[in-house]
Amino acid sequence: MKKSFIEVKENSHFPIQNLPYGVFCPKTSGTPRVGAAIGEFVLDLSVIEDAGLFNIPELQGKEIFNQPTLNAFMEMGRNVWSAVRKRMQTLLSEVEPTLRDNAALRKQAFYLQKEVEMLLPVDIGDYTDFYASKEHAMNVGMMFRGKENALMPNWLNLPVGYHGRASSIVVSGTDVRRPLGQMKPKESNNPTFGPSLRFDFELEMGWFIGPGNELGKPISVDEAENHIFGLALVNDWSARDIQAWEYQPLGPFLGKNFATSISPWIVPLEALEPFRTAGPKPEVEQLPYLQQSQKSSFDIQLEVHLKGEKMESPQRICESNFRHLYWSMAQQIAHHTVGGCNLRTGDLLASGTISGPTPEARGSLLELTWGGTEPLQMNNGEQRNWLEDGDELTLTAWCQGDGYRIGFGEVTGCVLPALEYSKA
Image (cartoon, one colour):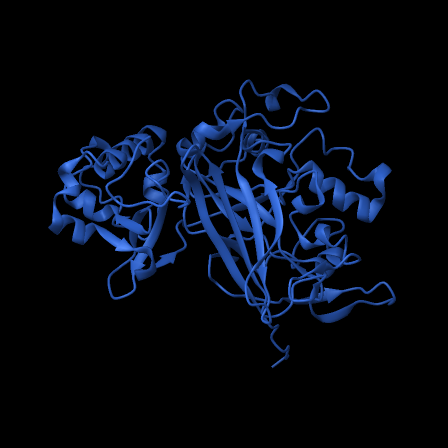
C-alpha cells in the first residue's frame, strides 16, 4: 500500500490514495490558490508549480494552480488530471526525497488545514439537481399519492431533474438562514406568509463537469465519465411547506433556491475506481442512449449528524450509500445533453436525496419523520420533526479501503433564524 512521508492516520479521509482538490487561503495573509489535502495538511499546488516540479507540458507557464478557482485546471481534461495526480503521489511518497528532504520547500508548500480558510472551489455556472434515488422517490410518492401511485409514470424511464440556482451555492461552514415564503396550511383556504416551519436537509452528492460539450452535440453514456472532474458532498436545503404550495405545475422554486451547501474538497473520479460497483438493476428496458456497458456506481458510505443548541454532541440520524442510486452519473449526463444542451466547465450536477432500503437510510427529515408524523428521538430527550434554529447539520462520506479511506471530508451548516420581513 502506498504511503506518504506526511503522517496520515488510518481513519483520515485524506491519504495519498485520495488527494482531493480545493481552493484555500491562509488565515494569516495571502491570496486564494489551489491545494490538495493530505492527512491534516494542505499541499499548496501553486508552490509546487512555481518550483517546476510537475514536469507536465500542458502546465508550463500557465500558473494553473495560482488561481482562485479550479476551473482552468478542470477544463484541461482527464489526461492532465491523471498526470498531475500521479506526480503528486510521487512527490508525496515516503521514498521520494525531492519534497521530503527539502525543508525550505516543505515550509512553503504545506499548511495545516486548521490554519487555512477553505473557499468555494469552483466558479459554478449552472446547477442541475436530479431525483435519482428510487427509494427517495417511492417514499415521497407514498406520502403524497399512496403506494400504488408512488412513482410517476416517467420515473423508471428517464432521470428526472430540474435546474437549480448556482448563485446560492455556498461552501461548508456557511450558516443558512431559514427562508421566508408562501405556504398553505391544510386547515386554511388561503396561503400564509412567513418563515418555513418544515425546514429540511437533503443528503446528496454532486459531480463537477470538466470539459463541456458543444451546443447541439450530446455526450454519450459511455463517454460521460470523461467529463466528470470529481465529486463533492451536497446538502440541498429544502423548505418543504414552501415547496409543497409552489411546485405545481413547474417544480421547486423558493423552496430550494435560498441555499445549497457543498464540501470544499473535490475527490477525483480516479481515486474512486477501486470502489466501483454495480448500481441497481433496471426494472424496465432502458432506451439505447441510457444503456451502460460497465459498472456505473461507487460504494460510498454516507452519514448525516445533527447537533442542536441543547445537545452536548452530534447525533447520527442517517446512514446511506451512493450505490443505492437507481440512475448513474453517466446516465444523468447523457440524458441532460441528449437534446443538445451544452454543459460547461464548472457546472454542478447533483444526485437528489440518496435514500436506501432501510428506515435509517432515509436521506431527509421528510422521510425520517414520515412527513413530520414520526418524530426523531434525540439523545438528550428532545424530538425533531424538522430543523430548528441553531441546529447544525454535518454530512460526511467515505469509501473504506484496506487500511485506508477515500473521504470527502464534511459539509456543515447551521440554521439561523428567519429575518423579520418588512416592506421598507
